[in-house]
Image (cartoon, rainbow, N blue to C red; front, side):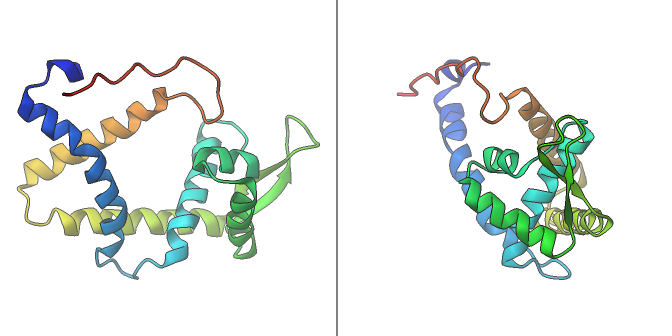
Length: 171
């Protein structure tokens, strides 16, 4: 079903998605998890996940790649990466593809912290959906994973490719 096929009620629902994502980003951090998430945790989680996903895809990740993925200035990405390195979560290494490049790898401590963040995210999910029927919780989890998996079809950061299809005016 395309955006133009949706009923007025469906259009309103689709229009509310952007606001819902903004609330999710802000409010999920408020869920009581043990131990509580700190301000640096979100940044570290983002960086470690990007490095982990690159490793799973058998690709190399650089500070510039982090900047592209997060849509931030390279100096911002460099500070984020430096924080992770200084705390022992990442190490720099020579690229196996081009020895002039420096790439990032998770350390054992970085992998453990990533697992810790994932446990906290599950705790937050379970807390937020604690009053939902079990079937709805599992269906939402399934659809959320399907949505996340569908992002793999998006163009890579910085890639020049097809323009996304225009979004029809919902008026």
